Image 1 (cartoon, rainbow, N blue to C red):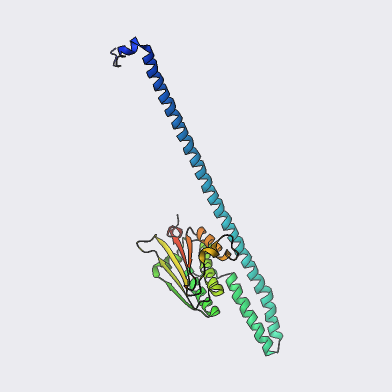
Image 2: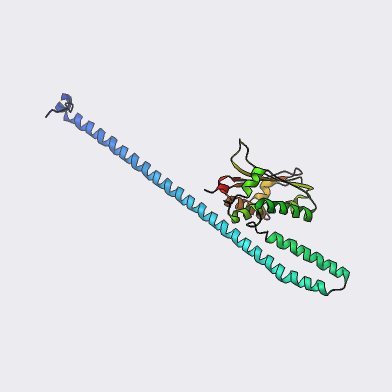
Length: 275
């Protein structure tokens, strides 16, 4: 059999310590290489474990937010039902029995306020009424109640996305609530005269999805100061951002003193077409 191995140099045969030094160098090199590979492997495993734990925490956080918001919606529905079935009914009974015009006027005003409150607490069944129509009714009701100049612009392609059958009703309600809370904030804090709701699809240079902007000409505020976690009274903005997270989107608030406020909601197209 032919031996193809290279011959051992004569120097190594005459000086075995040189061969031992070379062998020791090889052993040291491969030992060091093995240690490095082992450390790299351990680092990769630790990184993957941390990443999986991070994803699990995000998932649990999302579930927690979902259950909190779901509990809020159930409590709103309960309060709305109680107001409608007890207080409103009692007021109607009182109205039918009173003969004083002034008292009757006060009772009618209370009934109207309770009806409006019930509507805000428990919005119309979005499963029956498409989302674009529900938002339109919301803006009309807000205009009548607040006496503000409210304009709504919904592009046709955006309306198709809003009414997508792939969007679950719970997500439609989250989107509705974000618009509703934004309008309530304008009414309570902005001292505005005009508010615009603009709903459109993303342009070519933008991320594909739905963009909703609520713009008012009010007094504005320091957005970073109000949105700080330690500040009281920021639950409205925080709640809107939580709902945006459940929609897979983002919500930003831009405002300056005396320059009005702009709330921008972006929802990726994947939310509407299913994953």
